[in-house]
Structures are given as C-alpha cells and as structure tokens.
Length: 391
Image (cartoon, rainbow, N blue to C red):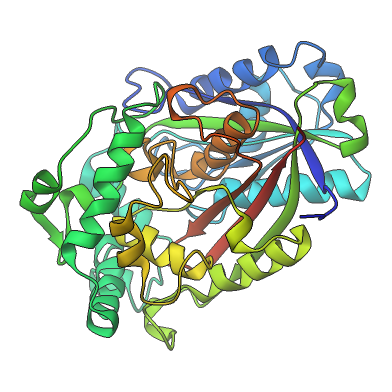
C-alpha cells in the first residue's frame, strides 16, 4: 500500500439528498459548498480555490445548461475557471478525474470538484426519458428500452450463467436500506425486509421496484490540493492514491458479455496498480448500485470475489457493516439516493467521512483504505478511485 498520493482531500460537503421541493440545483449545490468551506476554516475559498469542475448530466431537468459557471456563481467563486463534465451517471466521477489532472499539472494548487442534479420535480416518465439519453439512441432508446430493462438483461444473463437468484439480488436492497437508516443525509432512512423487496412489483424482470435506485435531488463536493500543501489546511487529509477511468461501447448490445462491465475491470486495474493496492486490502467501498444487481456485478468486477460469486458474497454478510468489506455504508444509490450528476463525489464524501472517523453510527472501524466506483450509462463509462487515510 505504498502508492504515492496523487492529491489530498482537505474538506468535503454534501446536501441533504431527497425531494428538495422549491429549490433549484444551484441552491442545493450551495449547501454542499457551504459545508465544505465551513469544515475547513483555514481555507479562504475566494482566494485559495483556483478551479472548479462540476458533474451534471442533464440540461433537460431544469432547462439549464452552463452548469460550471452557474455553480461557481452560487458558491461565491465567480472569476475562477469553472467547467462542467458530463459522463451520464459518472459525471462527477469524471469531474474528480479532471480535478486530479488540474492539480497534478501544476495549473491549480487547490480545486473544488462536485456534482449536482435536480430531478424530483419531473414526472417518472420524463426522468426515465432523460436518463435513457445515456444509452444508444438509434438501437436502444428508439426501440423503447430504458435502464431498468438494460440492467435486467444483465441480471438475467448472470442468473443464467451463474445461478444467481432474485433473493440474492434483493439482499443488496435490504443491506443498503439498513446502512441508509444510519445516514441522516440519505433520501431513504428506513430499514426494509427481504419480504418487502420480493413482494414489490416488477419494473423489468427480475428487477422489482425495490431493486431500483431513487429519483433524487442532491449535490456534493470535495476540495483537493497537492499532498505537500494539505497540512496547511487540515490535520486530517485523505489521500487519493489511485485513479482509473475507462470506456466501453455505448450500446449494451455491442458487447461480448452481459455479465461484467469491462470498463469497470479496466478502470479498477489502473487504479489498483497506481495505488499499489490489491482488492483484498480495501477496507470499504462505495459502488454504483443504480440497480441492486449492479452492486453484485461490481463485487466481481472490482475483485472482491470471483466471477459469478457476487450473490454468494452478499449472502455471506461480508459487505454489511461489521463485515470483511462493508459496501455502500452511505446507503448507496439505492437508499441514499441517486441525483445522477452528484453521485460520484457523494461517494468521495462518504469516503472522506469514513477515513477521517466522522461517519457516526455507520463508521467502519479502523478504516484505512477505501474505494469508490462510479458508472455512466450501462457501463460505457466507469471511474474508480482509491483513497488512503493519512492517519
């Protein structure tokens, strides 16, 4: 675990996730920025921060583009270069990569990286249509398939190949709702039973209502600097020691396998090698559970278990708080919520809390190494980051 730090996180902020009626995305983002600034009193935001990168998937939700400048304005940071990144649901994971590039290049010593989405004021049909824009238009969208359908195809293929069961898939929802019940910023803060998940209506077989992540409003951000400057701002930095991003075909139909995301395996390989960390050395992870099955697939693609054994791993309890490798201690996309542009840096926010011992009731004991995994579309983009406590 000797990977050299790329950058250091000196602070982080996240809005309450949920249905934020009467608020615009910019107002929600200002909540996250305010928390990040107040957590770091030695930081002078207006003077120290030299660039901003903001993940934001869709102009359609609020009929508002030009997100970089809009969020810089409402965070009190006008004047600095502010850039929007778009990679579907991996938009702020890609923003984090951009922030790392900026610091490593030497062009900016301190940058703010974040993401935002305001979704709940739209109907479910509208949100489904907007999200579907991240799939292939002529060969997927045009024929009416949506993301529940695409991930259901993957789940069905995995069940056929490896014997994975609906009950195993449903256990991810039970676990993540339990974790979400411990997170005061989560959209859903109540536990559910396996029976509740199994009895919920089908959305796209074998995925049921409780297998699907939530339409959510929210924002998140982290502040990065050079590792050698971190002590100027905080006694508790978190180092990012590995960063990987990869892409795949935009259309699921073009791929050789439906049971694994090649972009994830490639991004993870890059991040592990850079960090000089093995999957077995990861203490906790935040993975992209847009659907419960996606979490099981992530276990395998990230090397937490062998191919085909994701169902067995969730059954074992090892990915629950108190287990060998707790996954989605925040509640994940399933319970914390999935404001798509904000998800990548919301995962980083959880990692910052955990690795500085500030995660409260969901704190993982003695956590030193963490991983985040953010996916765009049906796996056309995947971003993996590895974090190490400075303690």
